[in-house]
Length: 276
Image 1: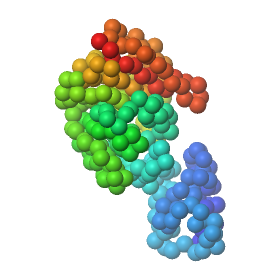
Image 2: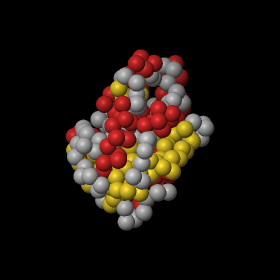
Image 3: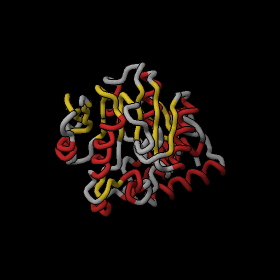
Image 4: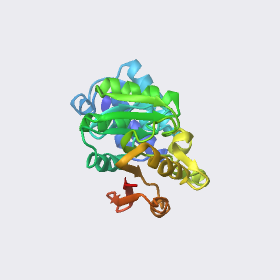
């Protein structure tokens, strides 16, 4: 079995299994089985696969056909130009969340103290720490997620302080200048309509925000006024149809409310300044 034949057969299996982007998926899985980069596949297309590589590749294809996301099979996902390790204990970082990073970088100064609430893999906190140089804190209620995030910070040499707590429940009053979060925002009632890769594999704690999907935003906006210093910023990623409900939560004391849209034109990030 050559590399080229393995790619052709793997692509065909994934196509028959209705797996999205079957060719790319086959390339990624075969590269992972060979412990090589994707360009290696084309430079060595006539190379015979070892028995070990073939066994691993077959297992990866089987797992993907069962719905397991490619990122959980390979244990990695790129975010903002860096590779992050992921496990089933954390949500897979999405490209859309890079809009939250960009909006945050426009507000964060190196002298700030910022916090990523519900950090998951640590992708947001690690990226912001490396890009801004600001003092960075990150919380998560899941100890397993914090282990993944801390390992990513160590590997990428980012200085982030990780704290086990629910959102900002253990953060001191008026101690932050920037509060950032990509909270769980999928309504529980939408569970059955999710892709199987999401519904059956990603951690429910990181997906579902409650019956309506806005419950976490209610907590964040309420607590933000406690933990932020005057003039501090709250920045959150928005879920589908959540802009108006979240904006309506920002009552007296909030100003300079701004919304950023993603490449599809959907409202993706809401930012607001606390000015009591």
